[in-house]
Image 1: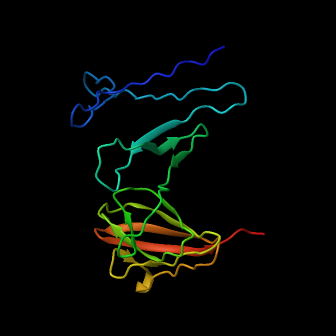
Image 2: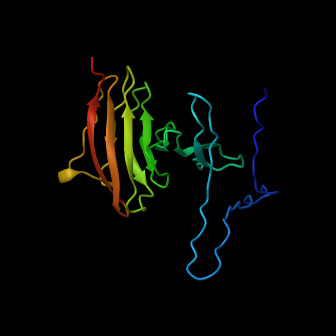
Image 3: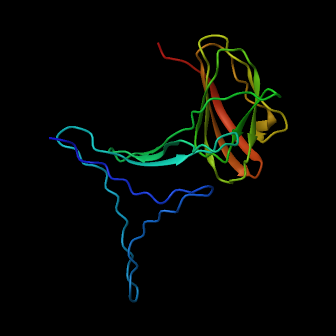
Length: 202
């Protein structure tokens, strides 16, 4: 028996130049005195037997680092899984140090950051930009490769704030994983706590 057909609701795209049309889904408004509003219900696909049901997935397209005319790709941002878990998908994009040997963490892109370090021994400084969304928090995870691990250093006099003012050292031993929690407490001030040197328990 064939599977059901997919259905897509889509607003109009831009023409020669311009944004696409806004797509809004709105429930009916209540009428009368002290009448409750209606729910907006989104149903994921149900499964049969012991197989997994569908998730509800929200996707967004992150802006590219450079100018261009090509449409940016959609990627999963938030999912509500069939197990009733809220999953926030991390940013796992690559990196490329600039001419000042710096890699920027752009806090206009919310959520966790997972950076797998390259095996090229290209040392760099971590900088931060657009740290203006007070209350924003998440994790920065650095994964060391199996060899030729670059040295990563927090840039001085940047957005980073550490306990007692001393930066957390990031070890360069092969195959280690480091996790740092961040919290934007004020514009341009990112509090950092963390732990380094995670390795497999054997």
